[in-house]
Amino acid sequence: QVQLVESGGGLVQTGGSLRLSCVASGSIASANTMGWYRQAPGKQRELVATLPRGGTANYADSVKGRFTISRDNAKNTVYLQMNSLKPEDTAVYYCNLVNYWSAITRRDYWGQGTQVTVSS
Image (cartoon, rainbow, N blue to C red; front, side):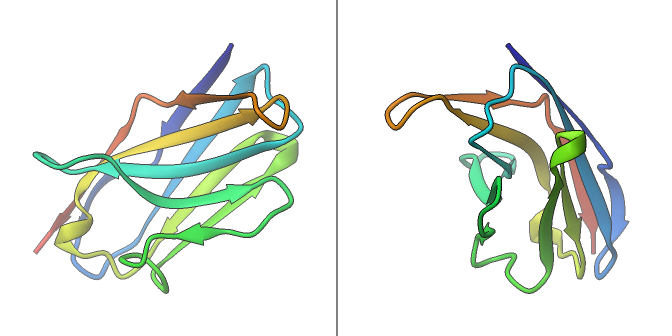
């Protein structure tokens, strides 16, 4: 089992910055991807950014150039630095961990979510 604990959400004005953190604990595969997704009211959950262990980051077009994902593998922690925030970034942000146990076996885990609100 895996537990993900997010922190760092809050209320910020347009143009401001926030940094989200997510600590993973439990059974973590050596091959894994950590990332962030978000869900705004009335909308589907969408990818924000993902970062495979030892790999290259992938970003949604809407956040490219403004958000940066990074990870500290020694601490099993993933971060999301969010700059130049816009009201449309308002959402609940969820941490995600994908364990790859083999070429065909994967297991997804989700955090409880942290609210990010950007005021205009």
